[in-house]
Length: 615
Image 1 (spheres, rainbow, N blue to C red):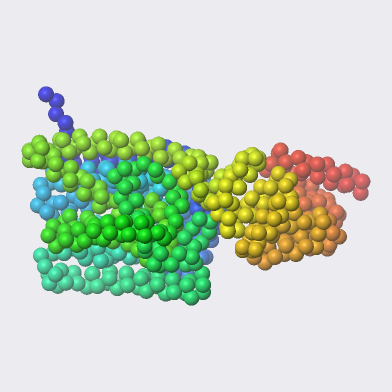
Image 2: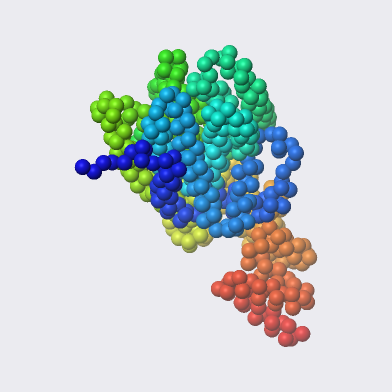
């Protein structure tokens, strides 16, 4: 009779390779993913990652003693050095970070279960099942496939590094591993603030798994824990000082933008989070309905607040009871709630619910699932045979979860696929509708763009962004009268530079001076607004303004957007009018080499060449 191999037949290194192979297969299609949403500001339009010199120019000594995210952006700078704006290297790094996290989780669970007097073979089996289910779960896709959420995965790597280094130091009695743990913590401080809970969680881990008593713990490792806790206190102090400044300045705190939690108070945020946390738990046990942008709204009704709050308080009470009666089980609950605490308690964050926040907390859910399955299999199969049944069950679950993860990765293959998926699941999501409008505009599908823009305005009528976006679409359709109404409404809600540009386009033929004033206001709000510079230069030429001023605006447009072919063409015409025909021809030829189908530049080149011949 053939036998099913268990961890007894595999060394830890072979299990590492098996984990790596499974993760590689499951996430192989993630390399087809494109840059989406926040990737634009953080990668595509971020000049600080274009070179290491530019990156280090943004740093200061102050940034080395304060929490921030510069270490994550350093990895993006390295990616740009490798592949510039080709996504493959960014996805490769994300995948490697996820793989390292799975291996660290495997080793941490293995060392911890050995400490609980589990035989080595059982420790390997349990650790492998935990790491496998955690790594292939579709809930992790947002932290792996969505490039900029590398920040979450990288912070989790350092969080796990804190625990791995500590556990290794206790197994080997080598203090160098404690140094690694402390360094990992500070690297986490320079990556994302979720690391703030690591010292307190590590203190509990030490007492539950390694120290015989609190007295022994403080005698042997008190200095180390004190240094960790003081570092975390520094982060908490700086965070609340920043938040105090935000609210004192009547800002919305961290939440801004379309569909965000802008204006949500700490109390409103806290009352909403029990429902969010329950939703995270549901997604772990039933990963259906994943969404890049859940468009979660603040809870206001008693039925939205009270039932989730009672359930979460019950789970917290159960965690506290377990810490007293069954500390190992209680620690899993503490891991989940404590790591979620920075984003799911009282500090308002732009989005009330996003899936990547449960990336590392879900490791505890994987531990509890595998432990529960092991208990059932042991009761069913007996102490000798349960390992094969456990391995089969976890392997089957991993196959199902892996297929779901693979399918979820396909959503990131294009911005259209991603935002269409969001709209299908959140039909009134104004932010998703807005992104679909921009997609249709780029493809010239103005009728579909108008339909989506009107839905976005109906969803968020008081959003200046959606009002202006509908105005922009109506301009493309020639519905100028209605377009002006929406653009002016946008400016009443909030003076956006893009709205001033659209108003200038609408009034320039009848009221050119008002249009010039609008463009000047746009540039006051956003001095690097290339389109406004180009449009202002054109208006100055049409109204008989200074040709030198027009040339300056064309040059500024090119400086802020070197690929702006319209500004380059306009500058060439100005140069030709000023007698610099050879420079104009060279500039137009450069445009046509870059964009051979740009007919305006071709016609301009014929005009300038004829002008040169007539001289």
